[in-house]
Length: 231
Length: 316
Ligand SMILES: Nc1ncnc2c1ncn2[C@@H]1O[C@H](COP(=O)(O)OP(=O)(O)O)[C@@H](O)[C@H]1O
Ligand SMILES: [Mg+2]
Image (tube, rainbow over all chains, first blue to last red; front, side, top):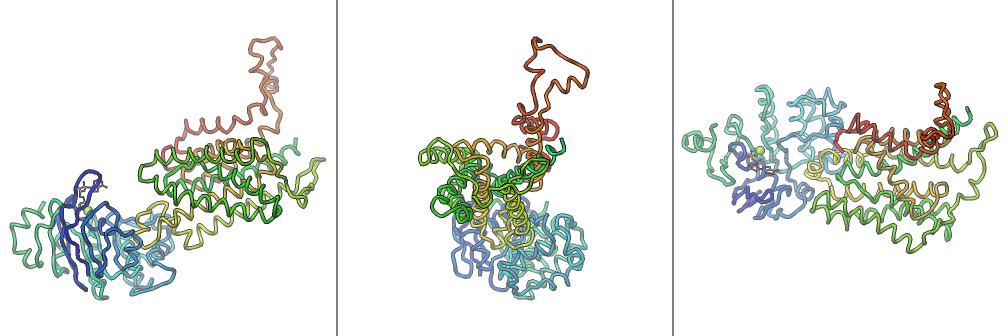
């Protein structure tokens, strides 16, 4: 479904991604793990056309490097960015509405699906999203992207800075996403959720993929965990 | 006294809402693209000249509609084929570019229409006093300006807060990249905003020129006040632009219509100076004389006490 080959990305003169190769098959949950600053966010941003890059990325057999962000989104590739870029002056409902590519064009997800999963969002549907708590904002960004009905969703550090109770909720949402046949590329630093739900994991270090395997294989590979993951 | 107050308020309202028609577009463009468009008032001038030229051939009313549309297309084209290419060289390049465009438009206007004021006047249909109060006429044309400005203001408010396009614009102001990643065509939104913003300036030009005059310096004259308005109100804040437009419009109108001078103030304090005093020029200054300076004084005071402007959140 997504096949990235020899992806290089640059911020100004610094060469951040140095030949990234990875793929996600249809219906798969794949995690991209690594320490802070190794280039995981740069990878998802390069795929969405936000960073200067070259290389190849085929999504549904179509080259997406060089397309504009909105064109890529229309192919069914969604992203949840790490800094929770909610629209603070708009209400929760309006934020969700802007997730949809056309007015009232629903796909796998409806407003009620979101509100049933997260009753906080229903209660606060008509308040400006800027006043929500960090956890609620994280739910809202994920729901907003889902309203656009992506077939593959890339989620960047959804549990960062959240209380354990909310991390559990994020995990439940990820499972629900997978249940509805949406593939996931999950970017994480912590292993808790990632190892539980993924079918495969990649570990990234210094702008390259340094390890690929199943969660069980990674659990047993103490050397890789020490060198590239543990802080 | 009371009639001067009432008329100054009305005229100030007319002028203030006119300022808002320009400052709202400038603010929208600035908050979305981060570009302070120095050529904004040039589109106001283009509106006036287009309307003048069109009104000769097709009459005032069709020109009132068509001229702003033409100006909007010119603005959209400037964004699409000019600014968008300059964007990658940074904000300074963009500023210099819009500066150059402002001069270019002024030169072109002078080349086509000459340096003289053009006889673009209010249509006969509106050339009558709407009402007379204390023996002073209030022209129907000014009421018409008031009506158009208020209608535009309401339309802008409804579009921005009630329509999907308005929501996309509001979202693009804070997070343009995110809006793009959600599947909305941000470059198109930018171009449309630029087009609508310049069209608003065009409408202002069309309706104001019969009162303020159609001449090559009109862009510069009003443009400098518009910049005072957006900085005073807080760069990027529509609410700030609205309040600042009305304040500066009303204050400036009051200043030119109340003939209060230093001698009156000093007399109140019981002071009097002879006509041969060495500071006589200073003691005899009157309000109408410094009226045009007042917006700049207000701006300086604002920048000293609140550099962000009334409602601003960014440093100038
Ligand atoms: N906007 C930027 N400008 C310049 N350098 C950046 C920018 N964003 C990230 N970087 C650099 O790129 C490298 C990779 O960052 P990132 O992809 O955010 O890492 P991760 O998401 O894995 O923590 C880091 O060294 C970071 O300093
Ligand atoms: Mg990151």
